[in-house]
Image (tube, rainbow, N blue to C red; front, side, top):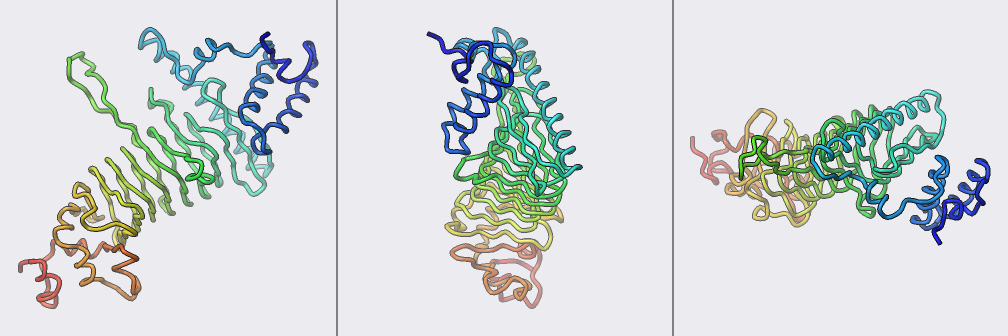
Length: 383
């Protein structure tokens, strides 16, 4: 016998809206994951409640669930685009409603909780807390959200793969953006999403972009075009702290602290700290004047990819390969400007090393008389 939505909530058919709502609230308190309940059972209960609100007696069959899966498929590309366009429009509209709801709560300094999103792409729970922080539970899938305060996130952030029109764009005008335990929960920002924090820090997990080939629009066989969804994280007056940054990503901040960087990643900051063992595949480091790049832990000159480019704020570009051939670690030992400012550990930190902006800017300059016989002549700089 098929279990009805009434059975799931433990009420009889014909129960009033209040009885159904009270049953749902009682079961939600029992099975919500925040109270140690079973997440799958909670989802089942919540879906039954939503169905009964629109008069649907039985849950979706397996066929209906497949039909309502996260991304529609169809017999033709035009059908896929049309249906996905509808999904994007719906979710983008929901995020606009969420933005207006959160802004109204902020103006009145009130607290509240509400669900936004769609059943097809998934719903999010937004809660405005007493301290002004906005807590988001669930995956952010599409659309824009601007908030005048800090955001805490329990879920991942992605952007639609089928269009740029409804690209995910989260903007904080003040306060920090933080994932809650991102490493433990494996949260990520991916697929071309944009996150901008005007006056705060970003604490993220893994960050991924997306680059893929599409067939030639003119139908030429064997000819492809490369399209990219570059994930963009910006904190112009703060820090970005991330784990692995991979495949078509742009990070911009005053300070950037990362583990590993791989495959077409652009990093722009005044202070850049690497804690992992990878810096590879056509990555670009844009270093602001007066800044430095610091490598920690197991990094070595030999272990850094020669493909990476260091670009200084004055426009000068230096291949990491050229830096490695000049034995930058030895150079760091010889030449550290303003050592009083950087401290005694300016050149070597743990088993790592630091490269300053001024050191890089001087690599291609002619040595002064004072430098002759020192680090400049050691590496063969000519007059």
